[in-house]
Length: 181
Image 1 (cartoon, helix red, strand yellow):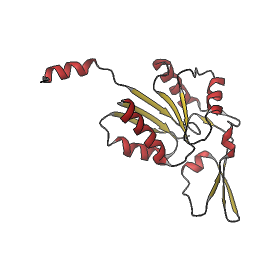
Image 2: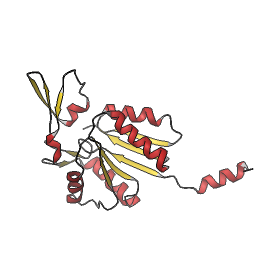
Image 3: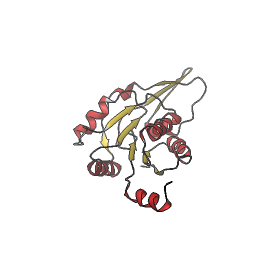
């Protein structure tokens, strides 16, 4: 039988396993990429920020082709500096870019171009704008890889809420940050 004293002393020496997850568009970078929506004869063009709060309507058809490259990137320095500090202190272990985009290579190239060492950083392109998909991806990391300290940064209130809802059910340390510009 394990004594309470042994459990406490052991827990004092066990490091947490940290997961650090950042969205890409309108979190780390602003681009001139747009989402094009067609519904019947109506056409709209939304920025990633507008799209993050857009409520889908029946009949909406989405064109994300602008996101096959990083168009005219403008680094969002405040959160990118946080990203750089985390990468430096962790060596990149447990650091991920989690994007709704379908292509990860342009993001890796952009980060490399701004001087971020990408050797241990993974970019996961979900090819989905469903907030539950981001929350499910993070939950899978917690459940299957043992992460017990999570930080998640995203500009979408929907993604932030879906992730918070999931994390509240876990017995882990977490911080979720809505990025506003």
